[in-house]
Length: 596
Figure 1 (cartoon, rainbow, N blue to C red):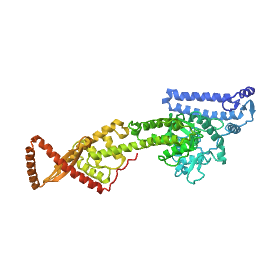
Figure 2 (tube, rainbow, N blue to C red):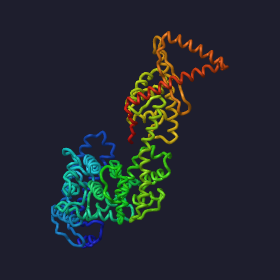
Figure 3 (tube, one colour):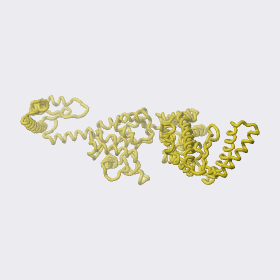
Figure 4 (cartoon, helix red, strand yellow):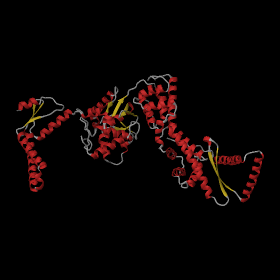
């Protein structure tokens, strides 16, 4: 039997193993079969449901069998003949078997790092440990430059951070700053040295990704196998740390789409499915510094902080800028042709380097740029065209808001460009709201009552006019919204005129007149106090005017047109004078530019 065991132990397997032969094996087998039979009876015999005594007897018998089985297992393992790789082993007790297995594990997983944390260093961590680990990874992305990842107090994620990232030096201070931290290779400390081989394997994985995109799941597989043997609880943390330490050289892809900047959603998706995250390392050498300086200057105007001067760090903020544009700007076709081509190329980018030096130059009307380009005229033409496109994209949505704001003010015969103008329209809206019984007009007036320079306010006006939130607009919705705003303003002024007329007492009268034509139409509403003597003078003037018009052969039906024209000229001239005085009082305040 021993010879057969030694021969069987010579067979190879994925992991090393010990083969044992024991004279107590048959006893263990008999006890196991008997215990299995009892458990089957307890689970399937319906007659036991009404017999409590029988159930207690079976439970007691099963408990006794388990104790006997444990005792026999201990005897079997301690008295067994053990062999490995064709040779017998000096194992005489459970303790010596445990030591031998530990030595074997140390031999197989010789490059396993030292991780002193039983909370997360498990194959299947508890739900609380997983929650803490997930929060830690989000902080790694969002607070990577802060000491202790900005963790306050000592929650579970702080305990994981200290033992998993801080002790090996994977997250540490930058050399020239006391308060700025970074992710980097482990230090040369005793614990840090134990991570050297594992980290080097991660670097090898990144080097392999220079030829093609590789899923992050492959890194998980590498680290989980010998000689590292990392458990699944800590692998995602170290994988993210490796990515953050090499972020400037990596292009990341989530579900096949290029990701210019990691966020909490990226981390959540990475935890759900490592295969959904792919990465590729770019090593672009020989790029002319002048080319990167021009492109970097273009992007840093719209990015916080300084950018390192490499091609990938220039391309990422450009893609992030376009991805962060207002949804309408991403859909509109009303922009310049080159701007639209640049927007579409950037939003669909899968290779940031090809985007920067091949795709964008082509859509800007220039031939692809080589990495070592030094042609100043070519670079200037490229960056100027790209700057115009970026500026137009950035200004598109604020320009739309300005257009709507100016249209509302013009149609109401006022202005929303100044605090005083907004206050005046707000006062008028407070007088109109709730008087017409027209729910849509009341909604419009209610919004006007809170007129402000906030983006959300003019967006609410546009959303009401188009019956669709501005974020969902297409180009046709703009014309529809403008037309509806004009209609609402006309109804607003009509209700305002009637309400003022009904609200006046004595000899006070209200006159409402719409002047102009086409898009220039506007309503001017004034309240005029007419005394009895003035009314008598008006009648005499009107009789004289009728006689003069009759003498000129003008038909009676046209007298009203002439009187209306005279009234219009008087009212308009008076209104223009009043507006000039108001603008002078406002000190020439300009319209606020909307910031997207």
